[in-house]
Length: 491
Ligand code: GLC
Image 1 (cartoon, helix red, strand yellow):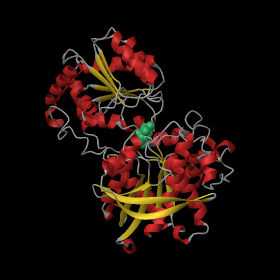
Image 2 (cartoon, rainbow, N blue to C red; image 1 turned 180 degrees about the vertical axis):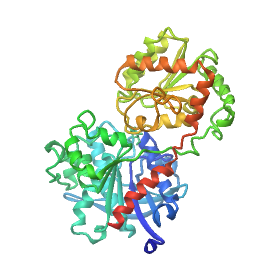
Image 3 (cartoon, rainbow, N blue to C red; image 1 turned 90 degrees about the horizontal axis):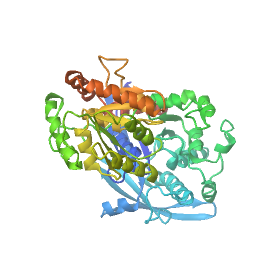
Image 4 (cartoon, rainbow, N blue to C red; image 1 turned 135 degrees about the vertical axis):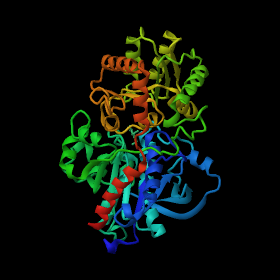
């Protein structure tokens, strides 16, 4: 395609968290890593295009504290139903990725990224979404693609479609939305949408209850809908995971696809990770045992290196199956293992993990907090990671764990199913242990199988090596996103 030489596709990537400026969950990893990886794609891998991806974020209090010197680059207004409200944009960059930060009176300086208050979040995120559209115009930087993530930025895509009818600036802009977690649709924000003059969707393919909900509104407006794994994309078409939108999504099936997230292979690298006591690679895995010894003594467990060490890392949510893990561990209390559970979240689940530690003080440690350095030591010293998620759009911990030679035991759902090859069905190639039902008994049985495999050092070493040899780089995912952008750009 000679005529596409040196052409640039402008991508305005909108999200409400991005590592390292602010990270609450997996979205934060993606919102930095994906646009960053897009910028790095060489034109010979994108059909001749340079991808100018730029990220825009709300300037949360935590970001303001981190970035002491922020230079404002634009002051502008965002329209309300009755009136206007002011907005300011500043600019910074993360490793070459340009980042715009939006502030204004409707982005409060005393609240976390997500509050439990629908109204507060409704106002903040609708304001932010509309400000993203205004910002591009202020900069006279015309996006070819507006890329939204989850419900928080959905209204930008929805409003884009309305504006397109009359506004030449946006006439050529297409939109893509990534679904990281469908159940969070932005419910309870109708009043706030009205406050900004946003009207319900007229798309009668949407169920009536969904027509004034941000995420479904964007799912109707977007040119492409991306789920964060192919299996999750399929699951979204079923009543079990579709949250009542399965029929609607089925009608948009030709515009729905799944692209698995990646991990940053430099940030997550046991050969260079400065948080772990002993660095290692696939070629000197024996060193890894020292990390296990350090870890066990750090958390106050007997440093018995031949006992399998199970770990669990992440938000303590019902979604993640923390309750299933606790039950399963109780069922196999007669076996020889140790476990460390790290994460914050639902107070009841936090309490239940602490109780497990009280019941099994020689086996279990519960760290109910967010602790990145400990997480890294767990990836580097744990033998198996438990991920019994009820649903898992993509999941990042299993990929990080594999990179560190820690073998996943996971439920076969969403991204877990797409990134882990089951050892039971593929003994020679498998990279983990999968089970099907949402059941602590099945999980317990699967842990038993893993412990059995662990008892043969040669088998185990081979599994670990296969895990570590996987390519989870963002590069692969970015190429797939680039294909979608290109299709839209050339249409
Ligand atoms: C959400 C999903 C998780 C996914 C992440 C990033 O947190 O629950 O599965 O990995 O988004 O897409």
